Image 1: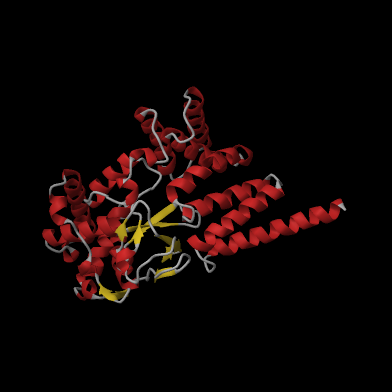
Image 2: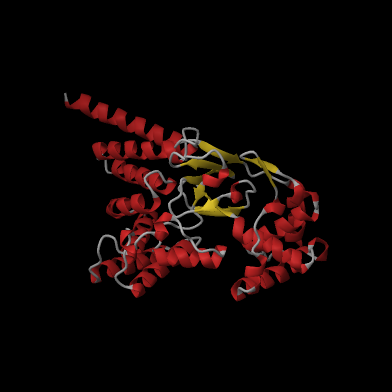
Length: 374
């Protein structure tokens, strides 16, 4: 049995200078052009696997040995998937131009490597749970999916920590479930994404239950699509010009003000994501706070009460209250965040240490405020 707060797996990304040396030479050859990140990731795999022993290297996973050769590839499903075939063909041609023939295996082997890459990778997130990269972790890739996961991956740099989000009544990997997708999606979207990206139909308790039990609802699919597109534009931009932030914020505010959407509506949820993030980036912290507060229940219900993103949300709310010098409210949210982050990240994670320091400062300020009033 695994208990909530347990660290189930710890996997560190290992720098590989010999592989990077090859990549650097290729980058110098094509400079000033730089291949897109998916191409570079695929090429790194090809370089690594040029040494055939790399595919056979194993690492222990709950008493089992697991290697790259054990990863699921879904080659036959990919061959029937026109979009994925086109993606592989573009990747293959670009990889050939970048690396040269020396590192290219037979095309069928390349397709298998591609399948293992797209099916098994984890999105690496930063301190605030924002995506910053992609990693292939041999051990954690063994875990199956559930829309009600009992474990979750958090990152500290390249290091992946698998944390128990609940007590798990098993002593092997078979009873551990993580989520492959964003759990704040409607059930229809989750099912479609799992079929398209991972080639299986989800029958987890959340997807099998009556749809009336889903927290998020949808008044208008077209409104949801519009809000998603606005948020996607924000998320895909590497740098935001202020005029773009003002425009996107205005469009999201107009969407909310011109439609009476219930608190559980999917379009409203997407608009709140955009408004909270854009206000924060603009430095308009007073305006950001109510939008972050409005997301709290949706995050708790969709992601779970001990999820990493919920913990980060609570921490952000606490810091926004602290900025407004509303110390009692800040203390309340620092304490709520600490309760979640203790489980989601663990006491050794940088986020927990920073949160504990902020909580301590808040208590000291409250004490000083109380002493001054006497």
